[in-house]
Image (cartoon, rainbow, N blue to C red; front, side, top):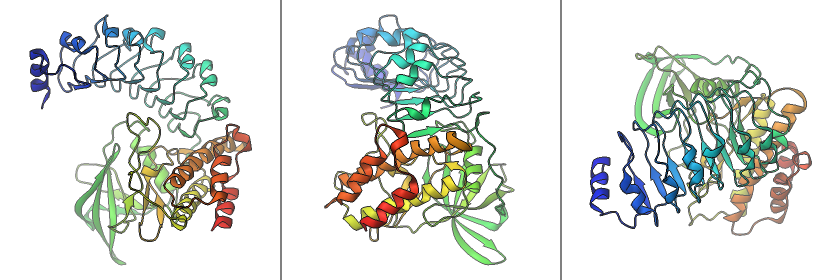
Length: 431
């Protein structure tokens, strides 16, 4: 049912008892009938309309957990959000928001998305939300985080790309549960080493079927014809818009700077001469039967991937996937890059052999030298440990050595986590 049909059904009372209500694309005013669902409504999507305010009595929606207002011209995150007693996920992306009042942050806030706005300052009360787990701030004007966030012990994922940070706060890498961080496109990020990847003329490509689509672009099957002969490849064409991780240009730079590794979907070259001026990369094409290891996080799981309930892995598969991903991350660190998004949904694997590769450098950032860089690597060790632990959850006979390793990688004190070479060595001893 489209927005018009849903709105008509709402006004007739046909949606009494609804738990989800989606009214995207063109809503000019807040329908008061939404408040009649106060006893049941949990998810409300008002995205891509022309709303500038929300009703003062929005707090009547006492069961509301998720609210999306992205794409509406809000200049201020509505303070009334703080009146919603069970609201935990707030998404206002691409609204032009300049101000985030302290009252706009619900008590039970768990997931806050404010990507692609004009926010320069965040309220000190942000760190007083003890359930905060995921914070998406890419594409704003923020130069400093509230010091209160240093007590955000449940924060696991933060996106700071394309802001105005001259330095990351020292306490950030000491947060006990932080595992995924992106900060590319800030003054605090060192320059990425230029890569000598070849330029691939558009005329040398034969583009085939669409293989997949993500936030930053589309991936097609392609054949690259060069003087050396014809080669099958994957073609990624970038959309050019801000994503939750940052700008596609930074992803391209990271892919090229990463070089090649057997456990990475490495870049073969940069596209030149696209007829519409689009930017693109030519990537290694994986065999058609390879699959993504898991689905991305859901509204319920927040920062954790969603695996197929039927998935079963034997110990040999778990060890091979774990070793491949860890070696890929170690290679990136050696090239001066933080992956920023080490997840099963960015891992492709061969069910028959357990072979795996790590993909998607959309959240990658250049590592600074010295202790700051080492501290950021220890944050990523936790992401590796979480992934290993998830693999073990689906393992038919989890190796004890690997269970101990997962616990070591995810311990609360980052300084006590093993280094990636130590992780690789431990996996080797468990084989």
